[in-house]
Amino acid sequence: MTWIFDQQETTTAEGASIKWIDQRFFTLEFEGTQFHGEILSDLSEEHQLLLKINHRVFHIRKKHALDELIHQLGMDKPKIRKIKVVNAPMPGRIVKLLVSIGDCVDAGTPLVSLEAMKMENTLKSSGTGTVKTIHVCAGSVVEKGALLFEFE
Image 1 (cartoon, rainbow, N blue to C red):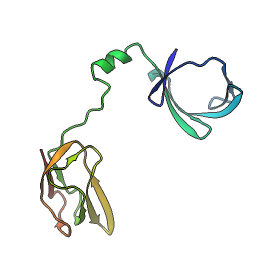
Image 2: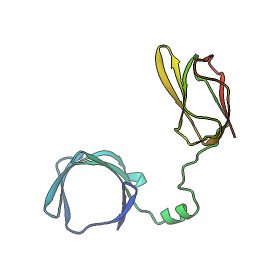
Image 3: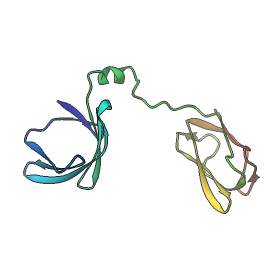
Image 4: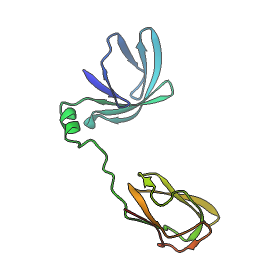
């Protein structure tokens, strides 16, 4: 039987045994070594488990016959949208620009540091794109909804 442990395919090992302490905790013995485990999340209907074994968290799922077809069709890729603009989510002062015109950004790329209510916030990209225009500079004061960046 094939399983996926932390995004890596693994075949079931012989010689492993599990002793259940209760419905949540267990002891796993493998090749003479004992490991203490806990079920953090049981999504049995989706063939997935989230386990903690010896203080390390594992994402485990049973490999399904359709997995290869889904991969070949590209349906397992996360959908990342292209962004067109980034607006200020709140009023504040631009502390520092973290990108320049022409930079390519991915989802999660830090774009600008914005000080609002005496706290510095890093605004990150919600998608992919190339910085086309920057409408602010360090020290600028912006209102909520103000256009900060345009992307192509």
